[in-house]
Length: 206
Image (tube, rainbow, N blue to C red; front, side, top):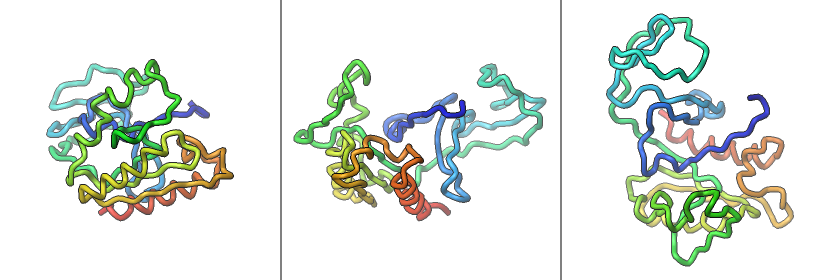
């Protein structure tokens, strides 16, 4: 709804593949600035078609109703590529365990996350990051309670041969720039951060 805020997990697909019904966020490739929110309908290798207001997958009508609105046009069959490669990622104000000596100064309690960072295998980046990891934009802010993990993450990426950039936004005077400050588009610093990220991603659009 208008005025609502959403949270996006940029690490969701490091250890898992997208599933049908997932809602994903991405920047429109033609301008690198417009943020799209879309639901995953087709999976790699499937054929998607729109007929009489319904979506068909491999010739079978989808039974899940994700919206009360029906599409008012047909669209020709197309096949979802079997291999979808992530060209680059942004790790913004991230929560992950990089080294044993970096303590996450997080107010997030176990009953909020479900598991502590050192208990969730999806957060064990040492087991998941290899030289095949996509180019990464790593950023945090001076008053982000997770900032201590960002620099080690950046250094880990470099040690694995992954192309990466690291940015620490804000100063000791910008206490208003806390966790995920870049989502607050009332801040000039948020516009600067998002512009920096768009510049980074445009390098990998072709």
